[in-house]
Image 1 (cartoon, rainbow, N blue to C red):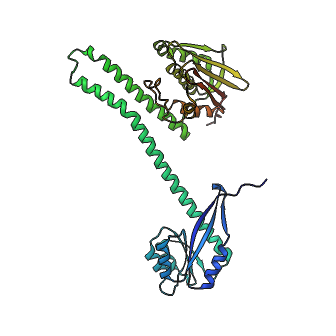
Image 2 (tube, one colour):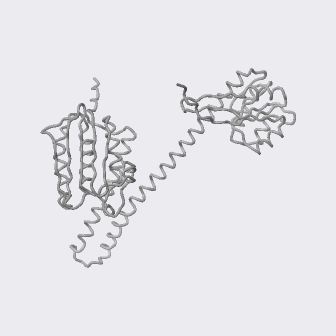
Image 3 (cartoon, rainbow, N blue to C red):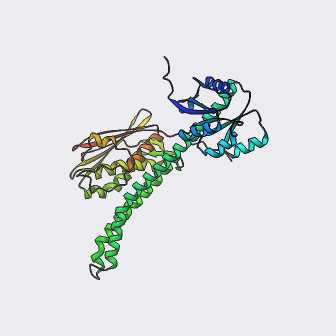
Length: 385
């Protein structure tokens, strides 16, 4: 079975030499020649054009800047150095000369020459030099593209973060001004609701910052982990207690279905984060009088965590965006529900650390079920002193 051909990236080569035979020979050597770049799943090929004098070269350079300039040092009307000095283009130059000297090399390098070819040269020598130049151009452009993408991602990230923080900051600032101006009179109790709302808003901002730190540590591989035996049933019981107040306020019944004990080798904090995120969401996105159920089980070599609710559910469109960063489902039911929009993105990354997967089933207006599989994490080897 043949492999699909690699995508072709074409570089433009301008050959400048007063010898017609040299120009024709170089063109023949590069005709049909390509440089495979398997690391990038691409191939570099070449289109070739030529010029016989310095003036022709400068005119051609102004018309279209090449990727590679194959430039003879001694031309009828000027030197290759003069062409370089007058051009100032963004291309790699390979100097061709029968008069190679240290002085020429230094001067050409200062003008931006990438490499040299001494006359006479073989087709193989030309191709080897052109290959080196092509790889350099390709790697430089890839690096520049990655840097541009990083800048764009950073810009989008900061824009989203600023948007997420702007509203709670404005709310807290507004409450502070109202209290400063004593608009509700001198009685402290009159400002209790403002203080409570400010505390809630600040708590939301703090969670956003902590979630961002968790996400950054996970993606950079710098998250500190303590791998040890963890009883998921015991951990789930504590999380049920933490969620109880929220469940009562929303009139949601919370239930745990689990064996007496279920031990997995894991980081305790990561297990708490996973189950807390699932159960908190099952309560937050539920209906009044609804039910949220957390189920734990062992399936072969993996633990299964299943969390289901009878809540508002999601559409197919919402499910497709579910694990994106800063994604929050916004509809008439979720408008007043706070969240950083990072919890499920972090959860999915943590689950991957355990060789597991996340499955979601949801029906709008009826409820949602998350099912996770987690394998035991390998215990780090203890190195002796």
